[in-house]
Image: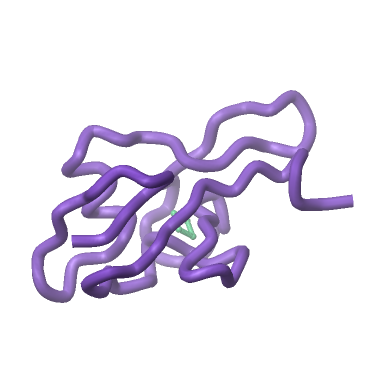
Length: 84
Ligand code: FES
């Protein structure tokens, strides 16, 4: 179990953050710098960087590669708020 945007999300052992979010019905967790378009998983293998989240305060982590850990605090990444 971890939290996403303050919401508890169950996760299986060795499950990626992205897989757990999708299983919980959450399909987008980032917005683009231009146009604030919603993004989530696209490639699912760590290539496209569409799935970026903040993990325990560390921004720009690929949710499709990060294994969910008990007690992780995952936050959505809004590039309009975080980037110049
Ligand atoms: S979905 Fe492409 S890097 Fe994560």
